[in-house]
Figure 1 (tube, helix red, strand yellow):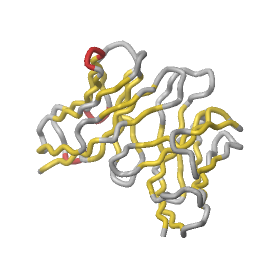
Figure 2 (cartoon, helix red, strand yellow):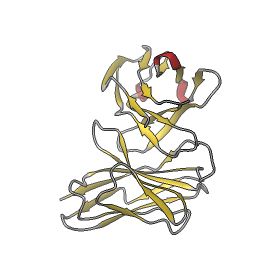
Figure 3 (spheres, chains in turn brown, purple):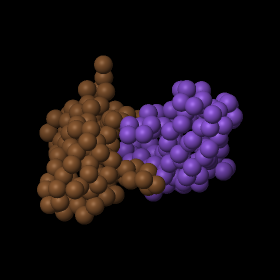
Figure 4 (cartoon, chains in turn red, brown):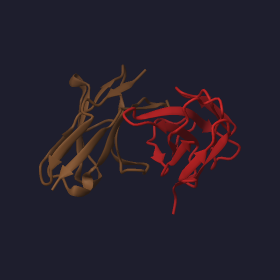
Amino acid sequence: DGGITQSPKYLFRKEGQNVTLSCEQNLNHDAMYWYRQDPGQGLRLIYYSQIVNDFQKGDIAEGYSVSREKKESFPLTVTSAQKNPTAFYLCASSIGGLAAGYNEQFFGPGTRLTVL
Amino acid sequence: AQSVTQPDIHITVSEGASLELRCNYSYGATPYLFWYVQSPGQGLQLLLKYFSGDTLVQGIKGFEAEFKRSQSSFNLRKPSVHWSDAAEYFCAVASYNNNDMRFGAGTRLTVKP
């Protein structure tokens, strides 16, 4: 049963701590994405990766970091430099790839991060 | 860069009534357009997409959308709304060979019994 998993579903963090959100896909997709969702603002792109060992900043990358060491995994670290990290985080993937045309994105169930 | 506007933040319709959610996009070339639905606390599910061809596209759950290039619109419609359709709906636009997808701010749909 192919899909995207995100863990944990809920995450609490104290101010000043780094925290890592997990995203795994078994769809054999090349491209993966991280979005942040805040009420009334839709989805904003944090980082995306078109291929293993390569990733690009999105519109709101400051205070976040990512890695793409494996095709199926794209973890997001929310660092202490992110001033307002409380939000709903969504991971997505698409067939993508550097030479592909456009393909729709498939989304995971999300992680809600709350800073205490 | 492409952008999307969803003019209605919140819409309330009665169960069984028809529905139209508006979406306007800004993009210089041929857009790739999508509608996604999100239930509370969940991820997004693709309802339908438009890449080319027939401007009226059918999606899942009885939804359809019409691409109107002259109006830069891609409105979502459903003839008869069910209580289970209550959710948030997002319109999105992307470009060919570019993995950058832009989302609207969303329209929250409430269904009255």
